[in-house]
Length: 154
Image: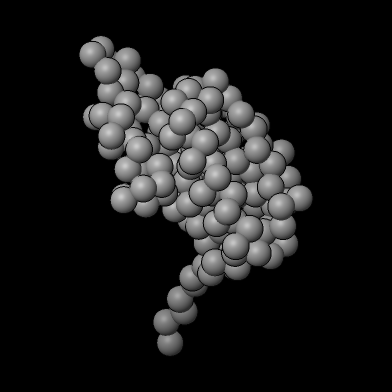
């Protein structure tokens, strides 16, 4: 008989780290609020949530790596907002942030979820940070809970 391992969305007794950026804070703050709200609604005690604020998306991966390496957290949620401008800066930061966030989790063996939105316009960023397209911070937090529970079973 096939065995299937699935996570659940029960956050009781989980310790969750959040790395969030101050850059584009209007949208980022909404994503952070959505992430914290989702964690608490799914049973994570507020005292078991640690938020680390960093300047921008480029700095997320180092803070996430440090948190993941500490083994104090069952999962790390990474939140940031990148809006395309007139230079290649957006592409460089988006690629490096995504790779760094992925490597932080892979190297430490701790779930590190990607809640960095990359948009063409400020309107798209507003939509993805808590209006008609949902809240990507909340989605990243739920993925963190589920992955933490999957890894506990493996």
